[in-house]
Image (cartoon, rainbow, N blue to C red; front, side, top):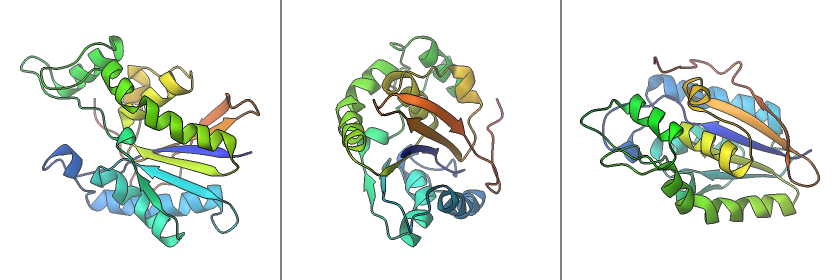
Length: 202
């Protein structure tokens, strides 16, 4: 059964523009550990795999050890970017994200709503998924926490909430299995045996 593996990036420095933030020392260790885990799950020497990644540096750095050492191309697409959370003079970052999950039309003063984000990524994500559904290979999405939830809710009809988002680790990994009609049959969250796993304190 072919698999879609959705991965959240590793732990990153908080310095600089969001798209430019790079993995910190723990994140680099996580990325190498994730490579070993993906080797065990996918056996790249004996299976066909396609990788699509967010263009954000922390995402690319997380998947690079696996991609490079497996001689796989990492396809970079804007459609897997992080949603623009933005800032507010009245709300913390996590309060903004909570409101975004409660109301898909809500956006901060400088951010975007979930509905606007979904509209911007829908065509690109569906193009990738339609090819996956029509062909025999395993697919990796290398992305961000909010995007993972949106993919589950709006592309796979699997319930994902703010509480689910709070529980995501850095990195994190979800294995999604599909039936013959390309409907999600089941999924398994599996972040075991990844070194230096990190949870944001809420």
